[in-house]
Image (cartoon, rainbow, N blue to C red; front, side, top):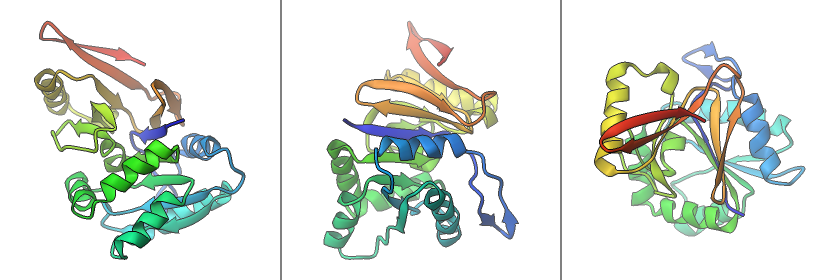
Length: 222
């Protein structure tokens, strides 16, 4: 069974620029752990996209250790065989947010994208937030190409997008002829094989499916 959880946004309790951020993704994090079907799953965090990788890991480590996980942080400067071992011998992979283009450049340059695809195919729980959500899709609304595990367009932080950003998303959907998924903060899409459902840590937030028919864009709340 293939398992993927893509999170639209939301904070975990960690320090960023000296400020303690709130915890906004509790129910989503609990679902990610539940999908592993283990009491003490091995949890691998990938922080390539982040400008504060150590602080980010310390925050997410506390969250997932409270949920029973054994948490570790991927070192992408290790030998490839060691990176492969880390990725394929874990139960949960979580890719953090940050710079999407830099993330994808690094994943492709180091062939980590191939290892992540193999992990997904093996049934390891794969997940990510913001840039870490974009990377599993065909591309994001800026047309930055992802790993295309989900052959669709992704737009995260949708509740924070202005009309210009939404129009850009619609145009990418039209140009590529693909379905779009727009995800608010505190919302995730859970893909289990060919099925998709919405997970929320804030019931006031939503996810949307966007399609283009006869050059007209239609947006439906999921």
